[in-house]
Amino acid sequence: MLEEQNASMTLEDVYQRTQISKTSVYRILKTLVHRGYVAHGESGEYRLVSRPKRLRFGLAVQSAELPFSQQVAASVTAAAASSGVELLILDNHFDADTAIRNAEEFVEKRVDLVLEFQAEEHVAPHVAYIFKNAGVPLIAIDVPHPNATYFGVDNFEVGYEAGVLLAQHAHRKWKGKADWVLGIGLAEAGSFVQSRIAGAFEGIRTRLDSIPPERYLRLEGRGMRQPSNLAITEFLGNHRKGERFLVATATDSSALGVLDAARAAGREADFAIAGQDCIPEVLEELKSGKSAIIGSVSHEAQTYGPRLIQLGITLVRGNSVPPYNYVKHRVVTPEDLKTDSDEE
Image (cartoon, helix red, strand yellow):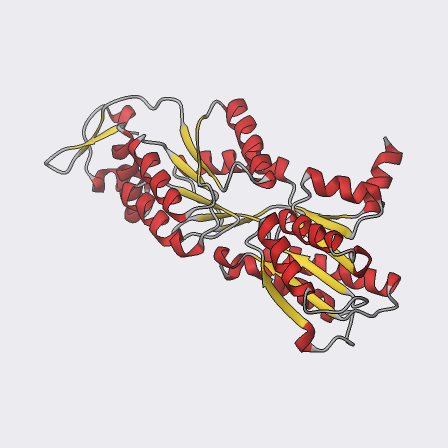
C-alpha cells in the first residue's frame, strides 16, 4: 500500500485505508521498520525505503543431536527451499543460555520470523520477549512461548493413546496385570509437554482399574537416552525380579534409554514401553517384533516443514492464524509396520 501511494503515510492513514485494528497496523509497521523495508520519520510518518526481498526465517533447533529434532530440521529445510524462503538455522543445544544467545543473533541478522524449537520452559518468556521487543513474529514448536503461535502435537492426546496401547498390551500379554506404571518425563519442558505423561496415565487408568494410585510413578529422563537409562537403572535396584512395568515416555530417546536399562538388568520381558516420535531406531525395534518397545506415537515430522513455512509466510504477510496449530499423529505398532511391508 505504501508502494501504491508513493508517499509518506501516518499510522492513522494506514489504519483508514486497511481497516485493520490500529494495534495490528502498528505491529506490522514496526516489523517492516525493523526489516528495513519502511522508514519511520521524526514526524511520525512512514515511507517505503525498499522493495520487499526474499523472506528470511530463523529456525532454532532443539538439539542437532536428537533424532526427532534432526527430522524436523530436515523437513523445514526442504520446505523453505521449495518455497523460496532463506533459512538461518541455529542449534539451541538443549541449553537455556544458548537459546537466549541464538534469539539475540536472529534479531541482529534481521530475520523476518523465527521458528523456535527449545524445551526449557523457564526461559521461554525471555526468548519470547527478545522477539516481541524487536517486532519479530514467533512460532513455538511443541513447547508454548508467550506471545507466540503454537505448532505441534496435542500432548495430552498423544499421551493418552500411548497409555491405551500399554493397557491393551497388559490385557493381551499379562492377563490385565501390571505392578507399576512409570512415566519418564521431560520436566524442564513444563506442564504442557508433561501432559504426555498425564495423558498416558489416564489412558491406562480407564482400562486397568486394578493398579493402585501409589503404583503410578513419574521419573525424570530429560527426554534423552542416558538420563532415562540412569533413572530406570536406579529404580530397578530397589525392585525384585518378576515385577511388571508399563512405561510411557515423553520421547523415543527416553524409550530407548529405558530399553537399555531393562536389557542390562536382564529384565526386558518385564517391560512394555511406549514412546513418542517414531524415530528410526525405535522403528527398527518395532520391526524386530521382539522388543519391549511395543509402540510409538508418530508426530509425522515430515509434515512439520510445509506447514511451518506456510504458517510463517501467512504471519509475515500480516494475516491472522489460530493460536494453536496441531499436527496429525498416529500410533505405530509392530503390526502396523508388518501391514505396511505386506502392502509394499
